[in-house]
Amino acid sequence: MRRLAAASLLLLLGLQPAVAQPRTPACTAPAGPLQASICGDAALRAADARLRAAERAAAASTARPATLSTRAEAWQRRLEAGETNATPPRPFTRDELLDEYRERTAQLDDLVRQDRSIRRLEVQRCPDGRRDCPPNPVFARPAALERSCLGTALRNCRVGAAGLVASEDRNTRILWQIQHGFTDSDGLRAGIVLMAEARGGWRLVGWSFEGVTFNPPHLVESDAGLLVHAEGRTGGSGNGNADLFYRLTPQGWSELESESWRAALPARLPAGLGAWQGVEYDAESLSARTPLWREQDGNCCPSGGTARIDFRLEGRSLVLAAVSLDSVARAQQPAVETCPAERATYRFAGEGDFTAELRREGPPPGAESDLVLRLRSAASSRDYWFRFTQSQGYGTQYVLPIAAPSASTAEDGHSDLEVENDALGLMAFHGVQADLSILETPPRSGMPAPRHLFLPGIGQALWYGQVPGAPSTPRESLRPGFWTLSACR
Image (cartoon, rainbow, N blue to C red; front, side, top):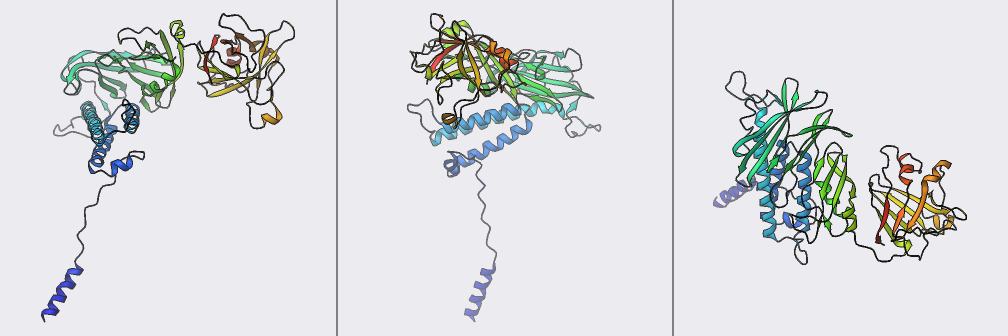
């Protein structure tokens, strides 16, 4: 009997449902070189989960989604790059990774707090006065705009200035407020809030509390349409940019991020020069100017000349399109030692982001020279290829468009492209020595490369589409100027 009871008890116990074990949350770390390390460590895994939750909260409340996304990508790249200042560079240690996660999450938490304090403008009291109605993006003009700070992002906040700016046709109006105060994490801070007139009231456009100064915004008509630009500066010796850019689209105001272009700038500057501080934007011309620092300069005193930076709009970003250097900056370029012509690369010294290369590609394209010339446009990502020719006797040298060299060039030779007769005069070519004397013949393999190239009419030929392959929209822009030897490949 006891055996039967024991057997029955065991049977009943076997029929009891198994207790569900808590499921480990999925790892949120993105694919990449750190994913395995983060997902395999409980503390790092939890830190990553907190960060991703903070990112989602920030994305839901921000008025600067393009900047938020750009910074998230830059932070992830930096995390994966590790300690680049170490000799040699090394990956972050576990403790360093945890510190990076904590700092980034705290920054996002502060950002969300600031954003939500401004979003309260969209929450209005219901007619019964007893509860908040659902958020409405259109609200009445804030009372006491000139005296009371909007939101609670800054402590001890006071209004520095407030006002209204309108487009020339008066159809677009932006209400703005500049604030001054401080935060526990960053100390003294300034803020700016932008609101656009909408049917039935006003609608938030954007805001920021990252600067120590902001200037009143202005509306400008640019090639990209109507823009609002608020100039701002960060503190410290870096004196960086805290500018806000928004573009009016059929769907409303859309933020333009203005940070990612900086990664492309060092490659466009002569070796030893850098833009260490903020730039002065000109929203109307989609450009900026900045002094340039030499390596031995102090933050106070740049001595490397000035650069003009031209931008184009791609999606939600200002993208670096061209860099022009003044005479002081151009003089800083290190002189290239004597270089064989077939290995020479040239940088255009005027307005227009082009490089030129002399190359040996396949059989000689003509009796005058065994080299071809490649012009590369950074603005359009196009290459233009030419061969050299020269009139008989005391004749001018020219470049003639050819098809891009290919695998068949070695066997079939180069193919000329058809051009109009009146375009030939625009394709004059001059090789120029360091003493500015003109070479009498086109460059050839084995000869020292000319110090400069001069093609006075090629910009006009590109602009008017007289070079095959030149786009009609947008047109190539290249003003007359020297191409200076910048590298020996």
